[in-house]
Length: 173
Image (cartoon, rainbow, N blue to C red; front, side, top):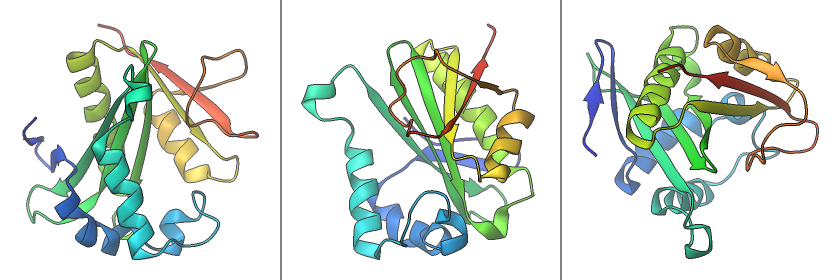
């Protein structure tokens, strides 16, 4: 897949040669506050995303791991990343943007693009996301994007952890 764009953003498949520059945006305590207990080293950051880029192991061949870099269309600056894990007819989505870029609508635009891309390329219309209760910024973005909080029962979610809040959105064709 090649890069695509909207008027403000460029979306391209995440590659390992992006990781050092992306770390400058994302490897910060305020960005990873609700994801990591301790800030990972640059090496661990690279390793984790390199594994994600490589895709699922053979034992999970029924999954697709989609990882995208988001850039500003005017400056080409890296803003953050988007991901979706497609499995069992659903997509679990996530987004992570540098703190300097919060509050500008980039993540909202990015999530809308990701959902459209997944729907068109993989035929998925059910989207799911999880977050910890303390991550109010994430919850607000999901609600703005048409997600609603749901309680069990919900499908098996690979990103779910005990105590997480679960959100769902159904895209209509």
